[in-house]
Structures are given as structure tokens and as C-alpha cells.
Length: 137
Image (cartoon, rainbow, N blue to C red; front, side, top):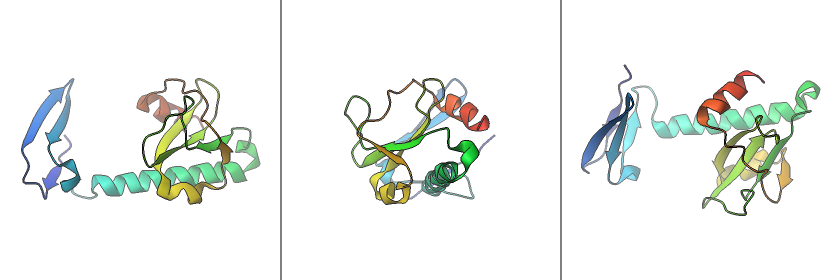
């Protein structure tokens, strides 16, 4: 069982169980620090973002992986985007896409990627799909 510690919050906290997953709900989430005892969630997101950028950069510098396009866009295929975010993607084909939204503050660190006016149409991939696709690279 995973244990999480929540600190720095005087806001009401609720716990909801959903299919075996425990979801913590609180007002003022930005005032909270959620930790597994080793890392905060913010630290883990920072690690995920930089590791993904490193993977994408590596893919653009190794010939055997170059056949898979690495791209970035400040717009979804329909022209929308979450405020302060962009998409960094691996692959364009439906069924092969791996994408993450990243903060615009990391845009300059992804200059190795092809720039697209709008992202390829999302193929509906789930977080589980992304994990499976990462394992096949």
C-alpha cells in the first residue's frame, strides 16, 4: 500500500475511493505538498518532464530512432491549448503517439523538435497506452 503525506494545508480534506484508487480532495490544492516520503508530487513532475525531454532529444540524435518524428506545438489539432502549456510529442500516427503537455517555460529546451502550427490529431491514447508505447521504443 502506498502512503502519502500531505502537509501545509489548513483546508478541509476529503477522501474518495474510486475503483480501488484513493483520491484526496482539498480546497487550495496549490497550498498543499503531497509526498510519498521521498519526493513531492512537484518534484516528480519536474523529473518526468525533464526525462521526457531527454528521451525526445535522444531520439532526434540517433539514426535508428529518427524514423519516428519528435514534434512540438502550442496548439492542439483544433487550435485550443491549456493556458501556459505546449505539447511535446513522439510519433504522429494514430496508435503510436506519445504526448505530454509541458509548461511553456520548457519550450526553449525543446528546440530540437519539429515545430508544428497545430499538433497531429490526438488518437485518444490513455496514460496506460503511453506506458505501453514507451515500452516498445
